[in-house]
Length: 345
RNA sequence: CCGCCCUUAGCUCAGACUGGUAGAGCAGUCGACUGUAGAUCGACUUGUCCCCCGUUCAAAUCGGGGAGGGCGGACCA
Image (tube, rainbow, N blue to C red; front, side):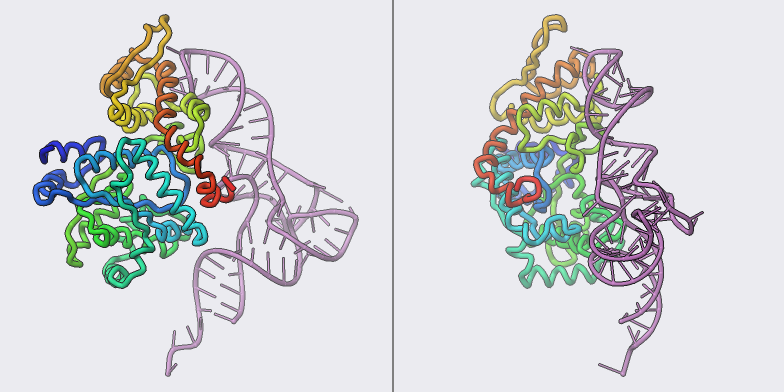
């Protein structure tokens, strides 16, 4: 694979890359540049995480050395979303779920390294850097950088601001050439690009995944069960949620069903060499088969493909993609039970 | 250490002064209408009124104590 192909693989299905030329330069300079993505083990993982994780398969295939950070300290620093006592359990659950998603995406999870925040964030080089950054960053700068990531409340804690600076520092601590995450992470990594060089580290290249729309329209909401599909949802539950999803005919913008197909189902089906089939009554024109997303979207936008026909097909495809992850989690029910005692205990 | 304020439905809050066991908006559920969903109509559901004790025939409401949260003041050799 040449540099152009590797770069294209890294950049596909992303929301933004800063800067693509830097990716090319990385591949030119090193045979195996490093990339990292961090997750604070807070709430249960869902399909949104899956679409973001799926890209790690692209990274691995492009020859990046990928590290996944399980940011356990962050999980508590962000408004104590995860109590200290549950950090171990949730970290284990996250790791297993993420490995399952990577594997379901067609990559070997053994090729991805896992690190927990507490393994290095309490050590001296890191903490000294943190204090330096703390001393040099204004409240409003940190506030702005983390506003899309850290929980915003009427009475914000200092932890949220420290969280933001720590994440910027994580990039350097893990020696990552590429910082990857959802587009909501943009503010933090822009701070990293701005501040890390001042502390003698290199400026990280950033790759951002899109944030998918919720099934009820608008943004996906963790607190709204019907707006997202969980990794543990049964086929029936997936079907119910997709059936109830906001899905205006002919409209691709903000259409969660189409987005799930585009960013999750098609890439995974493509990896498996499998087409996406829409079963449709003869009355409406009979079955349709799609090899790629673009053809489906143009049929949908033109009105050729009706939401009522698309939904059942999308539901079973999504269920199929999620299935191995759900299986994996159900093999070890104690993972979820101890990570979320209130809901799975 | 001192003082003041807040705590009512999943969420945001009204009701408290002038005691009679609780309301609105949003959310949610269900119908109607669309070959999906949404929007729009129509209907419906939801509560340890933060906890304990007391006054009273009767306490979300009054009195005392406590918990949690917020704000301010003081202290600064």
